[in-house]
Image (tube, rainbow, N blue to C red; front, top):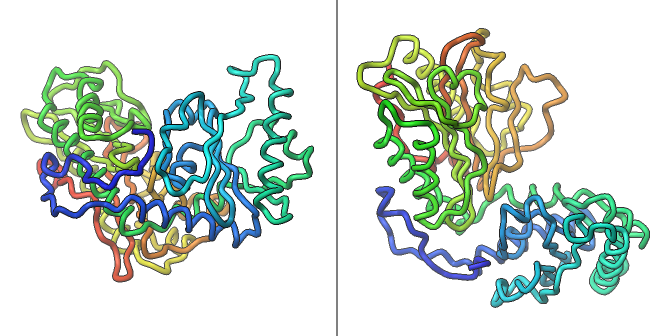
Length: 416
């Protein structure tokens, strides 16, 4: 289906070892909460409306989805979100039926694409026609204000809107701040996405053996996600042996050997479009891990547990969190992960806790709130070292402290 209008159970709970409690997710309630959150942010910023082309933001506001990966780099859809009332969606050729029944959308119109692939030499002309239609909608729905929050827009569209005296503001701020605090229905959706992800991780663990390639192992996660109703995976972050250090090498044809560490980051968009962002490091037997491997793993585990306990609490300032985070030993600082923790929802999201040693330019204002879901990160690997360990837990911030959403066990052989 092209939208999230169903009230249904996501697949994957039994496969992932999580008991199905029979509770169905009320998707209309989920959509209503999300649209209300975004509209409240627009009113706070004194914006008459938002104009969205980022497929994640369109989905958040409306529940409508269509070719999510393709439209992430091809702006073939747009959504007008007024500060009050229902949305107007411009969708790709012959795709209006995909959003039928969505109470968040008042009208679906054919998209006027002005991106170069579809417009060619007529980009400027088509951008002017597109902007004229947007200006008419703004005039009709925004009560005299010309302040429009826009998340992503190519220069021809920006210039064409400005010619209509529309003031363009950053639309990513209201979208990200709205998305940061999850409802009960969103958490239920995310738990099921995590269940599908962890089912794939279990298949990876079972398939890991000497002679399997990195790509073959990664395919177990992809296949399980798709089979259980998931959608895509944002990266290919799996590496083995000496390719685990430094981090951010994507999987390839390397054959995994006995005694290798295998580290990976799921970055998985699962059922209901929610992200399961979990990292683990496995040991490929036979045999036992070395003392050096167990030391890396032990430090990574210590970092994750410490930061969950110390930082994942409501009311904590993001700058203060950086100061309170686990002190990374000097030998591992140059290769540390890019942040201490970050938000997650439909994908990786605001907010982000930077490292205290990152310099003033990387820190920004914000406070952890109940309902935020955070991914607590660790990468431990020394410069010039053979291997590195990547661990990450997905955690819900509650009024009473952290609640783990990711449940996949840590590698028993690597726990010293």
